[in-house]
Structures are given as structure tokens and as C-alpha cells.
Amino acid sequence: MTKVKRNFKDSLFRMVFHGKEELLSLYNAVNGSSYTNADDLEINTLEDVVYMGMKNDISFLFASYLNLYEAQSTSNPNMPLRGTIYFGDLLRGWGESNHFDMYSEKQIMIPKPKFLVFYNGLKKEPERKILRLSDSFEGGQDEEAALECTAIMLNINYGYNQELMEKCQTLHDYSYFVETVRQGVRAGKHWRKL
Image (cartoon, rainbow, N blue to C red; front, top):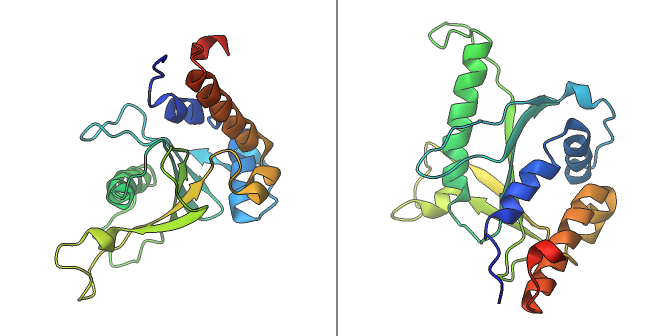
């Protein structure tokens, strides 16, 4: 059987949704909104920042939200931990670029973080799943923790989340392409010839 680079789907996701128009279409689909001006998106993906072998896929500021979109080809319960690290870096950069003084008596208003994980792995997962940082706390969730990060995992395998796919043609096409590659590889074809 032909081997396909495992993270090709993650790289492809970044490439497909790198443009503002496609990203706005995806944003509208997952949020049930109908924004039209893609120029209002401020992409702030952490380029060339790798922490412990991790690199964030797509992040952007839009409509008072700091959006973090991650593509995952494996089921990963550690995404909230990764999100916490990414959001810390993103907010630090945002604060520096806006010249905010965190030691001031004036409260700094920050964009609301929103973390979506687009899952397209082989393990069966529901269409939507909530992942919480607190699920990883040693000793369980007996006491209120000082920090929480929630990720919404959306299954974007072909055949899942039909309403979402209908709202974003690019996401549908991405999902269909990944499934076509999978079927071809299972049939013994080289993925570049599909």
C-alpha cells in the first residue's frame, strides 16, 4: 500500500483556508453568520513558531473574536492544552502590537478567544465534541480551577456535518478530496496519481 504523509491533510487545510475569502466562508459557516467583507479579517497565524513540535494552523481576529482553527488528522484530547499555549502567544503579540500596558490601572479589553478543531482522522468521532483543558487536570475537576480552555471539535470527514458542508463549499471540497485520496490509497493507487 502507498504511504501518504500523515499530516498532508493539516498542510492542505492551511493552504486551502489561507486566503481571506475562503476563511470568511468557513467562519460564516461555523458561526451561522453572513459577513461579506473579507478584508475585515486580520490573520495573525503564528508563522515559524514551533513549540514542542507544535505549530498553529490558522488564527485571525474578526468580529471581536480571536479565532484559532486547527486541523487534526488524529483524535487528540490535548488540543485544549495546545490552545492555551497558542492563545497565550497570540494575546502577547496582540498586546504588544497595540502597545498595551498590562501594569496600568485601566482594564484592557481583549478579543474573545474561540477555538475550533477540524477533525478528519480515521477514528470514529461524533460530529461535534467539546474538549476541555480541565479534563486533563490531575486529581479531576473537584475544585474550581484558575484556568480553562475549551475547544469545539468538528468532524469534517466526508459524510459528516452536512449542514456545515453545504454552507462552505471549500470545506466540502476539501473533505471530498481527502476521502478520494483515502479510497485511492486503499485501492493501492499512488495518491499523486488520483
